[in-house]
Length: 226
Image 1: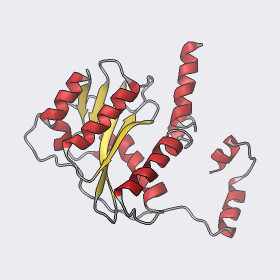
Image 2 (image 1 turned 90 degrees about the vertical axis):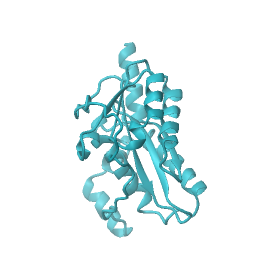
Image 3 (image 1 turned 60 degrees about the horizontal axis):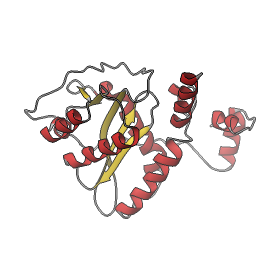
């Protein structure tokens, strides 16, 4: 919080922020663990090697993307969010929200990311071993885009820690501090505002020198031109 205020031109200490939070009856959000199974790794589809191997420090945008699915509670029925993150800038470059976990969910998120960024061939695409990611349809899509597939080891969430962390942030900062969405349309609009206008453009990230993903990408562009 203090870093964000400093970035906006305010001089304030952590103690001052804590005092104001106490007076305004504000507190940080701590969520209880609640996990819904979103992928099924019990299948006989071919598995790609763990090429990424937890090498999360990437120097070039659009060279490594990581992706995963998470559950979004809704009164109108379960919803699922598929996200694609650029591992260099931590920007969410593509996402889809649907009421199912079929391959078309992740396929649509990847399509949106590809059309938005137009990466060069050879991009490394990392996911878990879920049946959606190992399906013939999705494998064919990766090949058409010229992407190399990398997959986590069985039962090892740390192999895809960055996208897991992003979904955790989303739940703590948005989902758990708001009443459950009434409809898919309401959920979509709220997620759109959070992802596109707050997370990607304003929210500071410790791994990016406390810049937002978009600002960090702009900095990399200026450095490459200089």
